[in-house]
Image (cartoon, rainbow, N blue to C red; front, side, top):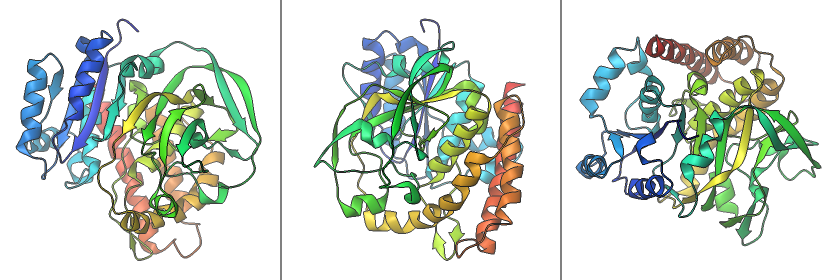
Amino acid sequence: MSSVKAALVLTTIFDPKLLDDYLENFRAFGHLEKVTVYVIPDRKTPQAAYDRCHELNKKGLKTICPTLEEQERYLEALGGMKEVIPYNSDNRRNIGYLMAYESDADFVISIDDDNYCRDGEDAFGEHSIVTESANEYRGVNSSTGWFNVCQMLTFEPARTVYHRGFPYSQRHIPAETELISVNGKIHINAGLWLLDPDMDGITWLVGPVKATSLQTESFVLGDEAWSPVNTQNTGLHRDVMPAYYFLPMGFPMAGMAIDRYGDIFSGYFAEKCARHLGHLVRFGTPLADHRRNVHNYLKDATNELGCVWVLEDLLPWLKELTLEGSDYSEAYTSLSYALEEVVEGMEGFIWTDATRGYFHRIAYCMRLWVGACRQLRS
């Protein structure tokens, strides 16, 4: 770990005060000179964000905060990427992912602008597990094929909740879990969240909770355990990035304008590619304090509903899909073509021409993304 480097990526329309905490965390654990931060502003981002990034650089944390004009020039050189990374969207983080991939970083830490690192917990060190050689890890399988990572946390009040993106058809089903030993390389590390867990709008409306502690050790997922991966406090080996395009939202699905699931789709797709290549997905540490920005949960639930329905059909297919390719670029390209084909046969009220058109558009974007990543590394 002593020689590896990291890129920390976020997008924001606020003053990213949380980066002061990351600076102190990296310094406290001896990683300050190993990290480059990529803050991607949007049209609503205040001048205070640029000013803070300037101050972070003066304090020793290398921080890159490209202006909108610089972002435009960067994307224009990447063969069509400008048209698939919209403004006024958390999709802007894709620019940070591309810049991180182009850099000499060995791994990427993706955060949201309300994911604060915690005192006494080595955020860099925990996520750097994605760069380590193959090892034996504590793993888990489930009799349902799905593992609810929220059961790793303690909640107040105590109740069963699920991670945003966890299929509804698999919730509240008695499941037997089996602890196993798994050998391999971890390439995706999903740190969990205290305070406000990453739940969907429906779950928040049913009953708010606070996560107070992690009650288990970290686990890697076995062959019979899937769980959604988001962009909050997530570490990825640099090789994963060609399979980690954050999907654009805002498109219609059966009359509903979808939102808030761009990272869930990208996480599932990256997880599928990792499994195809024999790599592992880990959940647990480091923890982040999720000091959640203000949300209208009724609006969230409305905007998430189309994606919730689509995932009910896509996830069983995705789990059984056989990919081709010997690296993430090839596997992701294989997935894009398979996605185009499968949506043509999907049935049900959610599968309108608009929905199918959206996923054809996504498959096209996935291949553009792979092309951009190949261009950056060439």
